[in-house]
Amino acid sequence: MVSWIESLVRLMPIQHVATLLGLHWHTVKAIDHRRLKREVTEPDKRRIRRLIMDEFALFKGHRYATVAIDADTQQVLWVGEGRSRAAVRPFFEWLGPETCGQIEAVAMDMNTAMDLEVQHHCPQARVVYDLFHVVAKFGREVIDRVRVDQANQLRHDKPARKVVKRSRWLLLRNRGNLKDEQALKLEELLQANQPLMTVYVLKDQLKELWYAPSEADARQRWQDWLNLAMSSGLAPVQQFARRLKGYVDGIIASAVYRLNTSVLEGMNNKIKVIKRVAYGYRDNDYFFLKIKAAFPGKAR
Image (spheres, rainbow, N blue to C red):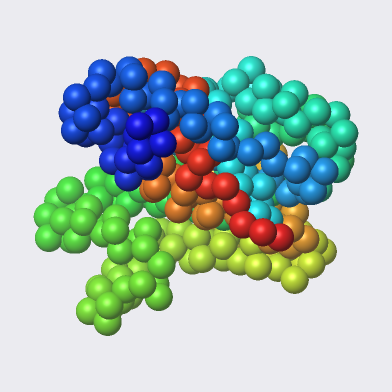
């Protein structure tokens, strides 16, 4: 009976299994919880060299959890509630001094809490900031701000203002992902508005920092980008560039460690599915075990 329940719970939500078999929800959950504790294996810490860390929404109301994976096997190593330094510290304590001492690089977004904990526990490790998060931040803080400012300056030219206000999607998408008609509209917009042209070009050049063939080349690309940003005359660009100075080493590190959090972004989509199916889970320990079971990693 127990083995049958374990098989069913792999395929169906707990509530469905409980209803099908006429059992209490807690009974089915307890059986599955024991199975997960038995089957979710500990990773071989001796082989961990590179990490990827990211966060995902745990519940509505801005409650988050942090997930860490082995960048080489894509095995979920650890999941914990929160995203502060105190929240992620148990992960490094779980790794232990010996494993922390062999970590070479950790990919993450520009999360200061994670960064500081890596520096504290793995001082020799290189932090690698994810391209997607930095460029997305540039989109939110710079492109959107300049677009709104330009729209406000066109308040007396309603047709032109309407075009600028509705251009957000065109400006944030990669040019290669646009259809011919959309690419034409983008080109017309950029030709007609110099500030938008400036931030769009800076966005594309910012991405190139992550594709430098060496650290020396990456540092030169950064200096070139910084000079362009500071000479743009656009306050949002200049403010963003000044803040980015503090993170430049983690951007340049990508020339050596080709790491990013895109793998985890894909995992997060599956975590959302697990969370939906898991509606009614009563504790995070069980939920986090479900996540670990879903990503056991691949052979090296």
